[in-house]
Image 1: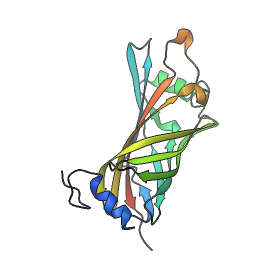
Image 2: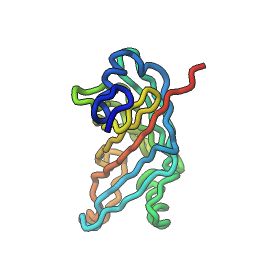
Image 3: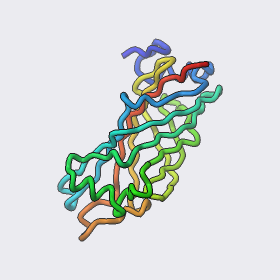
Amino acid sequence: MTSEAGGAAGPGSGIKELARDGALAGQWELDPQASHVEFRVRHFWSTITVRGRFERVEGGGIVSPDGTAAGQIVIDATSLNTRNKRRDKHLRSDDFFAIEKNPRVVLSVSRASLTSDGRLAAEGTLEAADHREPVSFTADITEDRPDTITLRAELTVDRSRFGMTWSPMRISSMQATGSLTARFTRAARG
């Protein structure tokens, strides 16, 4: 596949030139229609995997002239869906996301920069169920055009760090993995 940005083979290769030249500087908005957040947790002593997604997400970011970025992705925790109403109700309860008091999950990136292999290394915090924990992850760049960038990342967290400790007889893993596809478009210049 040819990168729209630099003509090099593969997404992520042209973005280095755009970042180096300052062409990415400015405000970016998350496209909620082309972005999604999914999660999975091993259950029943790792014999099955419970999968779900959050139906609503928003956010944005700023890219500095030097190519570094910061931003935030806000996930509507009330929109979680595992296709099992009883399970969804339990996940929304105080055993997990406690959506009555904490209707949002927030991934804040305080600093992100390109790696030598054209990926994005990020650090920041993840806030869920009234707990905030530091996180770091690397995102793959799957689309890199001058006005559109799509990132794909996975982040595995210990859910007990967020007070989500429900697991009678240790039936569920404490490790939860979130998968994020985030498409950002350049904000209108006004």
